[in-house]
Length: 326
Image (tube, rainbow, N blue to C red; front, top):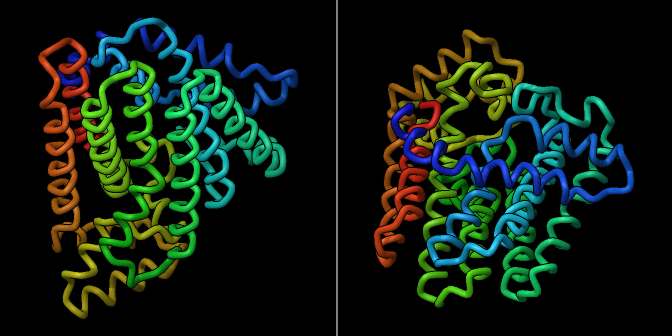
């Protein structure tokens, strides 16, 4: 992990600092409360991976005029908006180790600040004057909303298939990575084959990112997660480690797993028992293998680009995504 971090985080510090400045400057609200609520989440320690992808994808296409920095804030505002809304829908208590915004300011204010961030993201996209970027941002919002609704409808569904799950994570997570990479190419006026390649890179990276994110809920502690371990399960979200293990389990073990899953007040001991069953039926190793497949696909998408500093960093980000906190 330390080696992989050194491969790219140190090399993008200047851009990360510019992203932080732009995020603060672009909030642009005449109400201090909006900036306060938005800032509670925005400046709580996110890695800025999504805005960084816009910048790197513009640079790998030869663009370095500065507009990519401003554009990068749009995806982070969009991402933050969805998290503010999700925490209300899910009844979450913690986000990035801090109390969720709605537990401090209430649901109405938090929803409206999320709406403001979506509007700011749209305004920034429109400010580029490029219809391709406006279209991609609109499609991201549509897909993410549908993914969240699909996930909500499947809450607690023990019959959810792997295909159902993959469709949800593609919509609710991967499309934002895909859109970030694609808009980086569009702002650079890159040729279509490069835009398509970076779009594919982002989609596969985003799928792998969410696979690992869902896996972390079963292999990390509360301090590492920034939220309570087992939260996904308590919220009725069946992710791939569980879906795969349920499919492979013996009738007796499946019954044990289902009893734990149905009880959203399950104990620490119950959760440990479930993890043991996930390991027994290779739910955890299966997810790691699937994530590795998508990372390899992401890296292959970059094959049309000549060797460069930015290609190296994107490849390192792919490797980092696969091993973070695992």
